[in-house]
Length: 125
Image 1: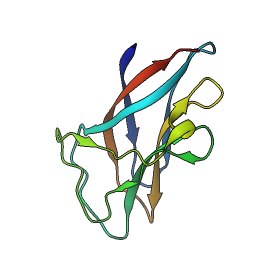
Image 2: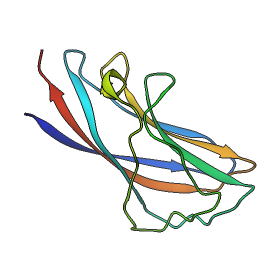
Image 3: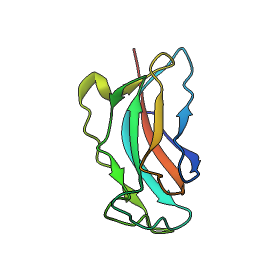
């Protein structure tokens, strides 16, 4: 079994949305095993103006529940595993359905800066 670990960086300014994608080779399919975020700075919780972080497969298939800063801070250096809610084929990414981490603001949002860790398993045909 081939398992790979990738790291991506997502930086989003207050009052902005952002997205970062993991490119995948066209000849391979990968199953998502683990998705983790590590904040590089602390983002303070705010019930009106916050960021919502969520992983997606392709254009619109949600892979995890959202992690918001509405009620809970993102604390610098504190690793947070994001629960994978997708099952079966929705956990398989490819070049036509890549994995992305998206930050979507509510109100004016807050700035967020996270490192994302992704563990994938190569699927053999």
